[in-house]
Image (cartoon, rainbow, N blue to C red; front, side, top):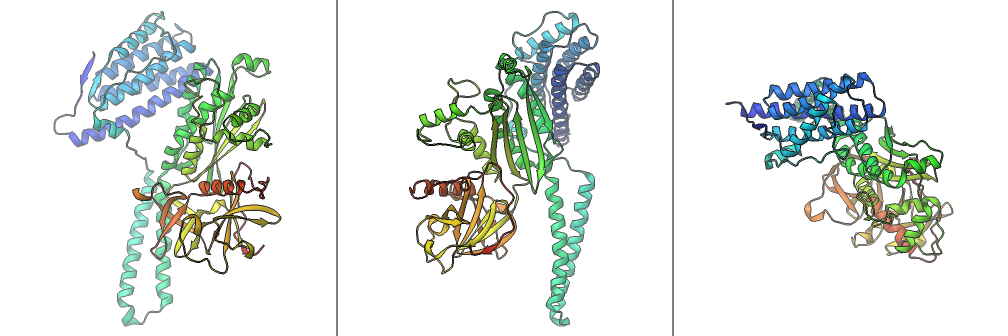
Length: 582
């Protein structure tokens, strides 16, 4: 074993931990850049990329050496030897050497985490690959692994180090920090003026108009401060997207396929919490595209396509949301196989006729898989239903478009932040419920013929049947409905439904609070918010309610589910809210 335990210099415990945290962040940036450069180098070898790769490795070695991490330094030096051999053209850039260096990046990640945790040493697997790196760098000789990427030795880390690895950090622009400090100072001054005004109001005979003027000044400052704080949490999607360049490359080769990932919209920003929650759904979508969408090189040649499949990951801002699209140029959805599998699982009857869009959305059903054998990527019936569940947990939606032989596009519509929602409030008795405003299509009065105590019913919306749920009954609130009930029409990728409520309260910005442990599994509820009068409002789990309404409607033989009821895959921007009788 080379290296050894590393610890802080005497008397610098807390300061040393801050230094290690900075080193860990910088090392991860360098390793991610090395990984991206290697993927690009394999696709299009050139000297400039090789030199960039060498600079990245050299910077990492310098940082590790300055902190006394000898084992990590030695390993990076071995990688430098191999890169230098490629630069000197003693070795030709190709898949075997790129795979060896990608394996070295994996090892360097583990070695970095271990060094930060105080265990700067090389294990047997690290030493074996280091020997291959040095052999290739010294002689251009064999030294290649049997498979593309070596397994990384799992170095056990102390519990404290594992907890620290899960911690999150953000970098803040100094100008933004200055703006926050300035707004905080201005808000403090405004608060002082308001306090003095209230203390002197009785003796000075101040009017309500003057009080409102003071309040509006504070309100403006508060909203500016809130926006600045929210922007601090906004981070670009580029780093997350670029992580999957390696994922696509390795998964494709494991299946004997060729695929490249193209990125677009890397500068689009999302709340860091949304970005973290997007990791797993995005990985599932990529694995699904590679397994079910992209064909083998022989199949693509037979279809007149390039042997290398193309995937495109795209992000774009759209009306207060972010759309993330993953498209491929593969075989498209195998709809006959999907229908066959759906009948086997009892999801549809043998005689039921389905439109293409309805067939495509069957892949999101729990336990659904068209794979005939279980592999590392598919066959167990988990994946796409997890995508829908995780995206809807973020108050997002999932859509799918596919063309036979041309490819498939998965579309995720995500909120910019999980902390605040622009919500439409509605009341049932004394309880207030909130739904995301982007799902609200319109509001109308419930026809007198539908004023019953039933949980579900149907109404006519411009000649089209629409199922609805009565929230009073769904949540078991009891009491008597008012003489006039209202219906809030929601448009969701799964369908168009209505929610019958007592009264409408309009839209506004709502700060989301998590539910307590006792209420986390409450059906139909996804969160809570504090209303202006101090009461608690409940945020509706709209996807669950939409599916419940459609399921109740499907149980009624007198209620056909028409194309209008089953909404298109992509969410549509709603028209202005209106409260009129149809």
